[in-house]
Image 1 (spheres, one colour):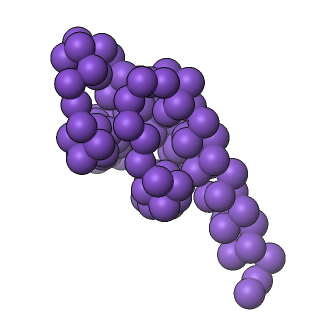
Image 2 (spheres, rainbow, N blue to C red):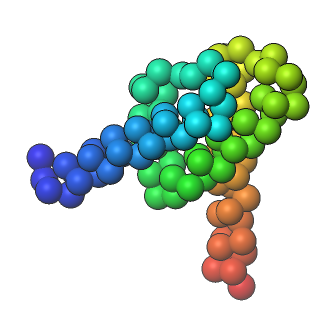
Length: 100
């Protein structure tokens, strides 16, 4: 493995652990996906991991609004959808500027 690949793997693992801990901090009463899910999210959103932190915040607000009535599957899907939506929204302005 090259040094760059090793660095990416280490960065991804660190981001996954931070997301895992952040989820617990903002939603201590919610079910939490396994670390594998956080690794997947940190890999998918590697170029902008802040998107995933914002998605966890959005999910925490939804969890609170539902009175904690979101199961693990719903929480995971909701967080994924929020992250994908945020990523698209943040990409659009850059694409619009580049086209101009």
